[in-house]
Length: 510
Image (cartoon, rainbow, N blue to C red; front, top):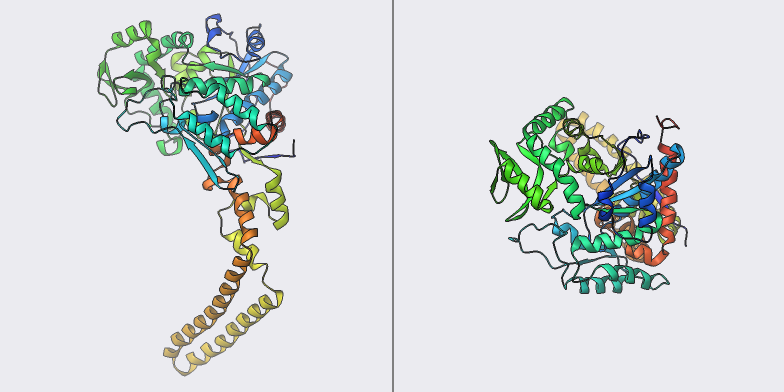
């Protein structure tokens, strides 16, 4: 595999060693783990005495979604390795498949870098604007996935890994599969060899196990709302800083109703769905939990608590946005009497390919400069190609104009102060003339250097596509098609080094 660089972004939240905790995996949950080449071996480890888990998760995405999904999973592998070595007990990476999510627009698109260096995309046909917000584990992929796969295939580079990559996706992204089901199968097959267990949170066994916690959260809805409001106020946390509103009477539980997955709001002693305005009393919710628990799911604040109630997890690895709202969650664990896992950062950063490094070296540019908004770097590089004698002449001319007009302005003030303004205007006009000359020289150089500037633009697109972080836009398939499965091992090793460098804490479990 060609030499790749994995460059982390600065951390917003500190790394620390999570404390161990009691707890074992309930055997009734075994069937909720998705089949993979290493599933049974990893389950045996997770069920052994004293075993713990490092968890992370993500909602479904087309062709496994953006790169940060893979970053999350491999971060869990890396941290689990470090903790297992530190504690001398099994620590298993678990990926929580959030198939309850109902954001079809986000789950139905994928993007990659095309052969010409531009951004290519594929998408499933849009869901009707008035369609129910069906959870992704019930939403069929449909025939639209076939042309989407074709678009991806056309954009993958020719290599020994191209066909295996397409075959892997083709096994799972089929018209008869659901959006979440295809995602779960693809993720499990891809990450199983690295020891990742994939937990299907929409499996009947998982839903039955989660239901009592959701019902309890509804029984305590008023108290939880007050707890969260006080907690946020005491810490100065707002919806602007966390992305989450609390204290507004909304429960932490979602229900599938006539308009799809819907948030429950407190309405006296009852609950009403936010969109469809259907009313439920607590007894009605308890009947749903007993007879059809698949209809119930936690919101983003309650989900990590439910996860910790079901799995012996010591840490949840999240991105910057998740960590900003997870600071709100401690009152939920306390009120529901659930052990809290420690929220920690996943690895976040960019994959720098050799072709990008070659361009950086050619132009003498740093990655930091490339990450900056376009314009200033290009202008500097073009200006550096101006003949030195021309640059010297421009600098001398500007200095002479500044000096000469300074003398004239002083004289104008002595003769008649009203002459100062016209003299200053003449000075600006003269200096503007030098700027116009330089601008024309640069424009002509730009036309002569279109090829070189195009290379720089392609390098920037590979690192910050559409001006956004690489990990939030590009999918993993083209990287796998170029570098093969060794890519994932190299990423995991780099992430493990990152955790080893950043972690602090006792070397032995308490």
